[in-house]
Length: 182
Image 1 (cartoon, rainbow, N blue to C red):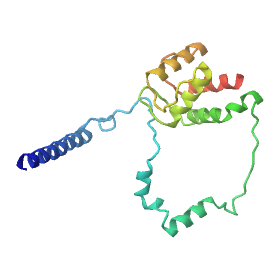
Image 2: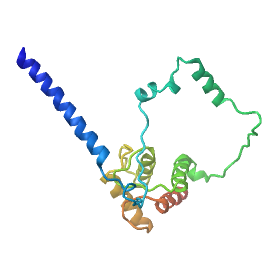
Image 3: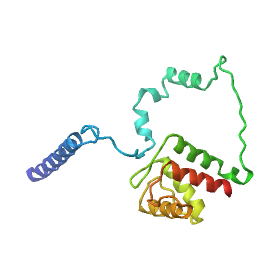
Image 4: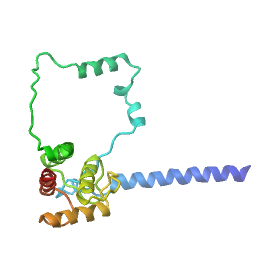
């Protein structure tokens, strides 16, 4: 029994030491903000919160009556705010891509740059465009990897922008222009 307990204690000790080493790395690693340097480009790493993360937050406690009332208040339109409906002209041929065009326009408006290592639904929008452009369906995994970089560079070369495989407002605009011609 003593060797069994010794093994268990050793494993727990190893895990605790590994956690402390990782914590030290996170706390002591140099960051561009601490050294006075600012990053040249913004890299998007967006992820959706897990349900378990939301459940621990009291704001998302569905059993709380105040929470349910706050949801109703958020959804109820304010009577003092007039509702203005606007119509936007969308080319009939690009209407099937209207949501993608809107997502790409938001990337331009927000001045988003993406490169290998970027993650999130914004990357998924670029991958969705690439599937339409290349007509070869590749699973959109919301991860800007080497395959996405290669496909972006091919598109950039075809439309006459710098083919570096990274996306920014100029590339998004070319994507929108291409979609509108379809």
